Image 1 (cartoon, helix red, strand yellow):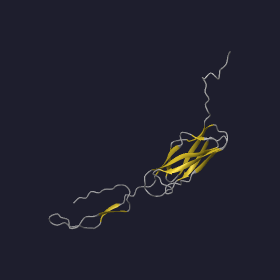
Image 2: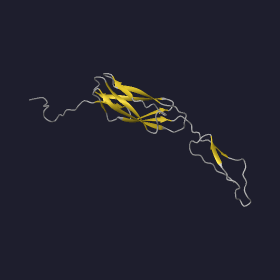
Image 3: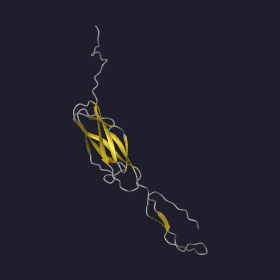
Image 4: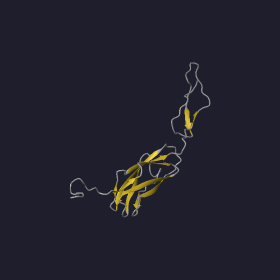
Length: 171
């Protein structure tokens, strides 16, 4: 006899892939931009399917830094790529780069959520730090002959408080 014996145990059934995943596990956007996130449909592309893109706080906090409204991502029959946008808030505050967490949830239409179901979006800060200005609180100070100060020397910081600053006093 010739041919292949499919009942021999040498073959096993493998279910077809039908999943939705992020195209990457990390995305970046400038604070004055709109984030573009690409989501892929792998495997079987028959029929309409959808999932929810959920957004959660990392170091970025909604609604001050981004719009955290969940986004429904729908793939039409045969469609393998969807791109969604996430509005970012350009707040004018120096705060360094911030992150938010993305996750795919609530699959419908027989699709599953694949292994790359979470991602991080980094918002690159576009605001310059405002360190401020250091100044003495008085224009002159006195000392006693023995070197004891008559009044305490006070330095104030105005016009900003971002980052650490220092000054050296020479007497």
